[in-house]
Length: 223
Ligand code: SAH
Ligand code: MG
Image (cartoon, rainbow, N blue to C red; front, side):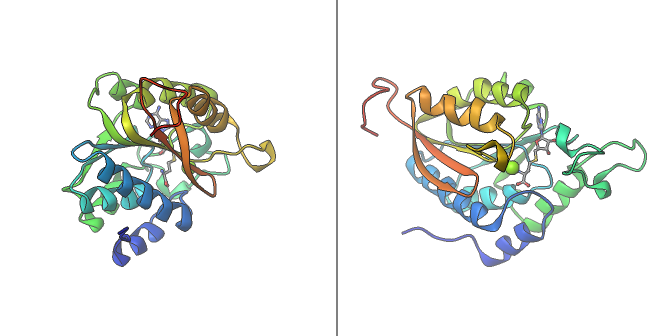
C-alpha cells in the first residue's frame, strides 16, 4: 500500500526555493518509494540539489523506506541560474564572492526537514563524484546542468550504476522545443529508452520515470 509524504515535509518542500512543481514532487516521492521497496538496501542518488526542494520529497521517501539519499551539487548553480538568465535568484548570491551559492539555503532546508539521518549532502561536481562512486543504485534522479555537455555526462557517468530493477527519473523532459530545452530529452531520456535497457513506468509534467530491465535481455519485455 503506497504511503504519502508527511504533510509537514510536503509543506517544507513547497516553501523551499526551487523548480519542482508539487504534483511532480509527489510523483518523485512515489517513484523513489517504489524503488526502495524494489531494491532494499541500495541507495538513491539525486543530481542537482539546488536549495533542497526535490531533496525533501526524495529524502522523505528514503527515510520512510530505511534507505539513504546522496544529493549531489557543487552549489554554484547551472549556467541558467547565473545572472542574466531567467532562472537566476539574486538572493542566492554570496555577498562576499558575488557568486551564486545555494549551499547555505540547502543546509537550512536539511536542518528544518530533520532528514539528516537519511540524506548525505555531496558538495561536488557530479562527474567528479560519479567517477568514484560504485555502489549500485535503487534510484537515480537527474536534474543537474541542463546543457548538452552536462546532460550527456550525467547520462554516461550515472545511468550504468542503476541496478537491474532500479529506477531512473529525469526532470525537464520536453519532447517539443517550444515547451523547453531539449538536452534532457535528447541526451538522457531518448538514449535511455533507445538503449533497450529501460522502460518507462510513469510520467508527470516534465518528469519521466523509467525502470531498468534485465541486463541479459535488453529487448525482452520481462521486468
Ligand atoms: N532539483 C532542484 C533543482 C536543481 S537546479 C529542485 O527541485 O529545485 C540544477 C542544479 O544542478 C543547480 O543547483 C546546479 O548547481 C547543479 N549543477 C549543475 N551542473 C552541475 C555539475 N556539473 N555538478 C553538480 N551539480 C551541478
Ligand atoms: Mg528541474
